[in-house]
Image 1 (cartoon, rainbow, N blue to C red):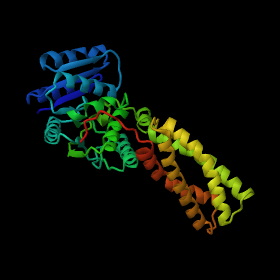
Image 2 (tube, rainbow, N blue to C red):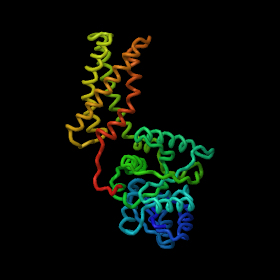
Image 3 (cartoon, rainbow, N blue to C red):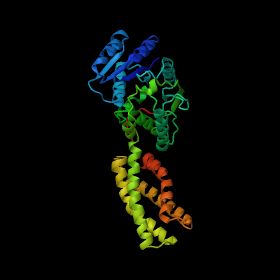
Length: 352
């Protein structure tokens, strides 16, 4: 195994010792990160360091899994400059020795890809929280990147060394870091390799430190911000459209067009500023973004007008029709703005 194993740990139990003992029989280099564990767990970390010769990094307080992983990657890159990459695994016994070695071997053979140990979430022993949490995050990932990933929550990953700088620059202190890593690698065109692994949940996953509500909010933050921005703009757009079509321009084809254009121009200005500065936090050239946004803006506006006009003969309120039409254009608009208009250009990555 040419890579280095990185294991972040918070209040670990004997399962971590058992795992490390088996791994050391295969002469694996291991970096353990004590992410602010309680003092009563010090003996476990001392055993890992002195008996099993693991490298130990210690946080004086809990910093979160994202910070712990970055600490481990940074340390391993300096301590083992000859390594091929980094394999990350969890400390709670959910990853078997065989699966860790399998991911490491796949990484050694594929130095240009992100290797993901993927579980089968259709099995009966999967806890409800984990099953539906993964389904939701997989769906959000598909919407955000147009890439299918069946196990977005997997902690067993193989990261090529050439992606060190990228991994250290990815934002996220807690579990959202792992999702951000997938988003960033997908955005940079880095291929994923999926390695089937055993699905292990001990005591209904009670040892996991994943906080469903708190960490889910962090994971979905970008798409939530975009949704809020779109909702605010949609309220402005629909309110103005309703007023204009009923009291100013009329309900004919020309009236619908005039109401759509006027309302969309006013709400679009608000939407552009919110998305640029709050949602995507873009610092790119304003004129370029404005031009691209205008193309998207008018294309979306004309499609909205076309579909609303075509459906206006139905015995349904025009505002309801417009809501349905604009909702279907939402996901397309998100993809274009995220990946084309407000795309962040990161420099310094050794990407091929």
